Image (tube, rainbow over all chains, first blue to last red; front, side, top):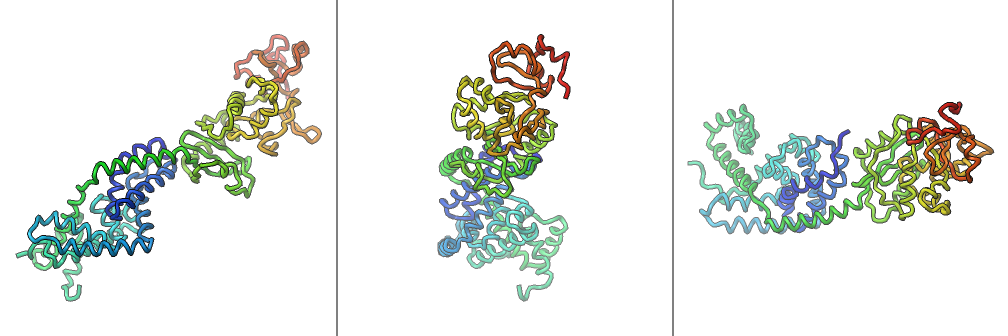
Length: 177
Length: 322
């Protein structure tokens, strides 16, 4: 079996560190924790890199390590509750303080970001991987331990929930007249 | 969803796919047809599109460059530390019993015979201070394949990159370097090796250095034997393995009075410092002070080491018959 050469790992870090950090930052929401997890992602990747088949998709593989770490992070019950409470409050604030008529897409972006953080972990992870990072459903499914179809269902469900959460705040403009 | 017409419910997934820009052409046409006649879904679709647009805009967001650079720096520091400490290992079955092979980024750093049932904790690998151990697969496969070829006599050299981090002293390093230079199919007494490293009196120390050889087989300490020809020790009581390794190379061995040894009379011999190899009975040996002789399994082995047949005893004309 042809495997990755460990010497090439430097290039892997250069190519993907920024994106993995950004991904974790978005799904975790806390800067310090996101940095720790992205560090851990690359340390884990390095440990396993020598056994990775030569034809493997390194980027998708890194995303799946990061996703696993993020899920473990969410599982930590106290942390999850704390984060949830904070985010709820900030969404309410973000939505309430949105001035009417202000540049909608930018405003919506900030609110959407807050709503993303409120989604159940699997939906948040699937949606972020798909919409922000453009990963294939098959890869997203592998990272979440489910099928490509379920990964797609998570993304759809996330989209529905974001729309619901925005509904009634007039952030999408008036109805189609 | 209650109260929604059936066709609106049915088109939901296609509608979402279209809003996300990933619908198949067929689904897109279905959605277009439906939207043309359903204002409520049209409105929903617009909202989904707006959400998708807002999310897509987030793609462009980057983390502050400075923060990223600092995070990268911290990551590099931890990676450098890990790279230094990481040993990837795996235990393989072999004709000599379970063999553990471990490697660092620099090369193979440990080859260890495991007694069946030995836990990792009890192994030598488990006692390396500061090492981070990872059970690996692929990257050790090639080394293992070569090892099997070697043990089956189909390969004479193991061209592995080696990492000598487990070597304990400069003396041991020198002994191992001299050992690595012993040709395939040749044996040398401990005393001969001590001479090679310039410490003729340090025979015991040489034996100790070999006892702790972290890379048996690839650094062929099995080719170092007692002056009498006895195999003496190997890997702490595994003298049988030493015999098997020597047999693979064609070195004749026998058991005499319960002790394993080579058969010196069935091997060609080399006096230290000479460039000509001899029959074991060469008269020139009688005229020189006794010294530890290097012995070769065959003329081919001796000549591959750059030696010429002795012009006195003429091993080329009177080869040893076995």
